[in-house]
Length: 375
Image 1 (cartoon, helix red, strand yellow):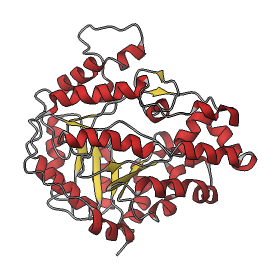
Image 2 (image 1 turned 60 degrees about the vertical axis):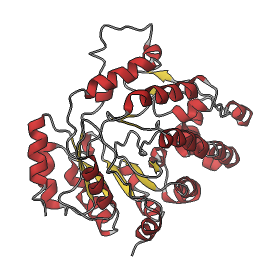
Image 3 (image 1 turned 180 degrees about the vertical axis):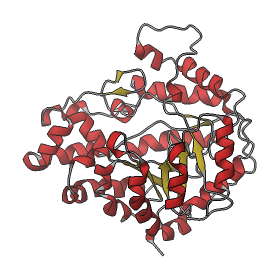
């Protein structure tokens, strides 16, 4: 029995979902049972499948004629963000293991913003610019739960909860501690040099990039759990207990020795307080460290992101899926509709959670019926 299974036997929280109802998701309880079976590499009737459309949450074509002075004002418009989400789910039936989830969002660098960085806004994301040039700049990193970003995420959370009951789930915002936090403040190129030229500065940055994360997570988890919400986020997979999505996109730039010395201890610390951890494995560079990631017993599943261009189609990654299946590690596979049959023929269904960008209700229904016969 792998370490991951021993951990889940002791700590996995299976929810009692019988009283949790959503208008657009009448089969919520059954879908959650499929997901909980997936964590155990088991299948109830079919593999779980999430239907999605990339960046659908950033569609502003139906803004009702509302305008803003700039992109920041649109991102900060709490009522608009919540109302546009509510309109997007009106009358919609969520098939498969797809759920209506509102996650308060100001972009993937929000933890950095809580610590003093300024966000720059684009149409579908936001980002930061490195500002740490030397040890004298470390004082710029200071967690402030009263700053404009923290208060805005709280406001979005509270506003979304006012209308959520029976309609949708409210998740917590996207949090990236550790090396991605460090690289945001310092810059990828400088961090790569710091391993050799200034490891003392790097270790202090790592300390600052990890020490406040759990308090932030617990703050929002407490708000949501008190309101009767499951644990959910941008991943779109609700969970009982505390769900977290660890990641380390920066690690694509370094070798195994540096990963094990600097990054693995961060990951081990980050996942321990959580009940469920799905590692966001972003591309082949990060996959170079897969063996080290799999050594962490608290990792319960992997989300594989194969990238674009030469990293598609997904069939070239079949050996990776088989490796994860042989290790007993559940995995999320984002599969194009026209690749689905080939993928199903090459990979056994146990431990697979499909993400599929279906284009119509009819296509979703067809895929659901087909998955009942995947064996």
